[in-house]
Length: 144
Image (tube, rainbow, N blue to C red; front, side, top):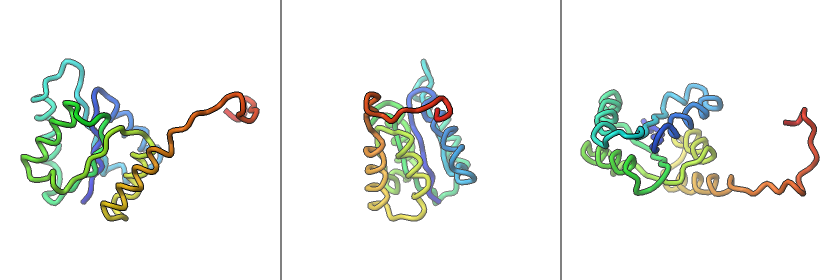
């Protein structure tokens, strides 16, 4: 089974998981969120992640979205996955946002990894837009 693993500093990953649950229905059960809490040691995060891993099937695979590549939460998670022989069956994308997380969740079981990576990246970058207030159509309070 493929899991969507959200990794972040602080509560960003758990907040993103909560927001995804508004759109995802039962597929939210395949989303794992883990974040490094303020003033928490990396070993504490590792122990929490080890506990999560122990509850998953042995054939679990991961699509990993991280807030930042190279950060200590992602490094800790990758080291732990590697220790369990799970890193080679995973792929990782940094700069996590809602569009990429929703795309990853809804498409992870229907696409091969290469196609899924391309789709996630396309959605992630396509969602970044500038809203020009001066040219936006007029709205009423009912539209907000």
